[in-house]
Amino acid sequence: MSKTIDEIVARHGDRKPIVAILQDIQEEYRYLPKEALFYLADKIDTSIAKIYSVATFYENFSLEPKGKYVIKICDGTACHVRKSIPILNALRNKLSLSETQKTTPDGLFTVETVSCLGACGLAPVMTVNDKVYPAMTPESATALLEELK
Image (cartoon, rainbow, N blue to C red; front, top):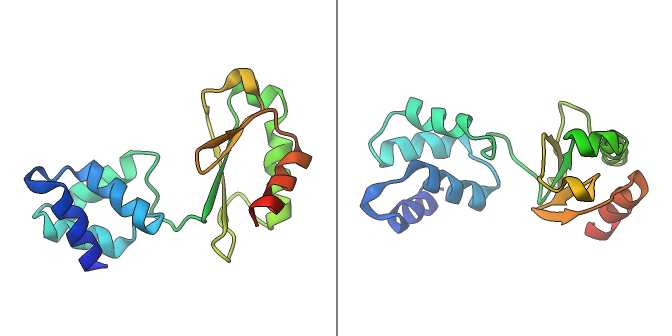
């Protein structure tokens, strides 16, 4: 892990932009491992508190492992009114997930809700690794899971 982080830090030069470095670490590991945060703090000579505060401030950072496919179900007003919750429930049921367990044990899928994906006219919407899927239903969402497997 240290070699990878060394390479990421080196790519960013002398400025050491914490957010950009954390983005690259998360892209590499699909989350921010605790060991990586401690190593980074030491590597760029800053406190672990500062690294942790940045990692927990931004919603896109995750301190827990995410699946190969990150599925985000929009639960904004337009999507909620057009029944996004049955889609969420169908995915959780199909993958045996709960509100607290968001990632499948095999590390293939992570299912999350978000406040808005900015595609209200296409509601209900979900994304898989940032690819937008409009006008979803519980049936089309579970069919998509089968395609992704």
